[in-house]
Length: 514
Ligand SMILES: C[S@@+](CC[C@H](N)C(=O)[O-])C[C@H]1O[C@@H](n2cnc3c(N)ncnc32)[C@H](O)[C@@H]1O
View 1 (cartoon, helix red, strand yellow):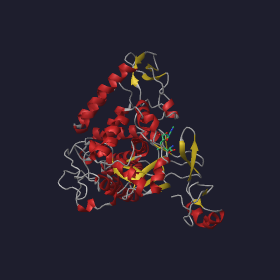
View 2: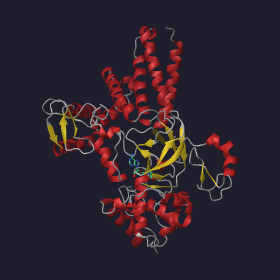
View 3: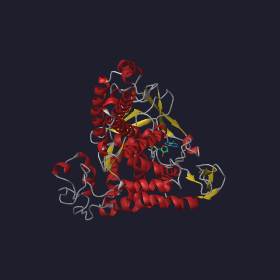
View 4: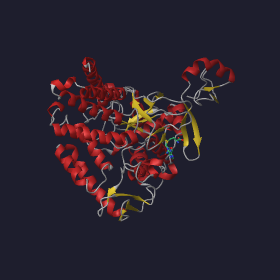
């Protein structure tokens, strides 16, 4: 939106505070101020040679405050997906196809959705309907859909196309990479040779593929990627200060996760804050084309957590990436100085990673065995171990038995795991974030259950009240965070449960006369 906020005519005079509202003249800016000052964005758009465009807080922002809400420029299936309906994104089996173009859909209702118009129109360049034959597995035919939805904007929605074209594509860096080759075959050539769409040259197609990869947000839950004109300006940090959520229309809502001071950059995470440095760096380098040099990435101990450290075979000390996690040559023991080559460590990590894959469907005892075995190879907080701890912290009291049937030792175990992972989450994904919300929810359940198990006479003693108060604090914080999620998400349902449980705990607290 680049029209004057008052009269919509072409405008280039930006509000000096937020650099978002734009006017055609000083008069219109003055005229709008009374209204605009109540809405003036808490951020401004800035530019730097290393970051490109980025967002900066234009005033102090409190944790939980909405920084921006942005509607999608477009939505499409993720690049690698199995066949999904091109209207509602549910998996499809081929039993219904669009009457106009032949792409499989759910129903005539989905066929009519405006979302589907771009590929529907463009696919009609073929003389016969599109035929999809491979269902319930990844299907490379779908790699062209989101790019087509972008390319279609060029001739149909010029303002959106202009917004899209401002986004970073890293076109030059992508040339000669594997992904460039894949896009050449599965998008550029597929569009020209199978769909008979000749309107877009290879460079345009590759730029669009880059824009999707670099700027697209993977929306949790369904198989959707969304492009958002304002939210894409958030820069990456391995300890982000904002959190993202989506409403039912898939508008993105960006909130301050922690208090943010005027002048601070607004950051999100493009990777996963609970991954180790090497994995985050690899992901950022190969999909976003930059090297993160944040303080966490430069600290071989990752703020003293040793999230990426392995254990020394000689003295069991923590072995860190040396001489620096950004240019590692070996793992070196902090205690005895012995080193292990990157190849040897990578081989061990790969083997452990393969064990991880099968844990999801196995009994919890197999995950516990994994944690026991790896305690001699990996640091206590290693990201592999933390991943498993987080998974089983959620499953105890849910997967094999309900929490009120859980053996006391297992209840203690769940509580310990929640506390261990929460310590790390509070460092790397701090504040009003989904991860902290989930962990506080689980921990709140443990504490509430510990109270429930107290003998009746102990329930009127001071330690019982302390337990109830802790449960109430945890459930309150969990419900506040989880209810910010979209109602479609499981997290939202847990938020509702946290709210109910909190009510019950508060009633018990009110009865406590200690
Ligand atoms: C989603 S875009 C962000 C907006 C972009 N800066 C622009 O001008 O359109 C992602 C790109 O921004 C740059 N970027 C974001 N965070 C960065 C960071 N922490 N360090 C260096 N570059 C970063 C990288 O070029 C990255 O590929």
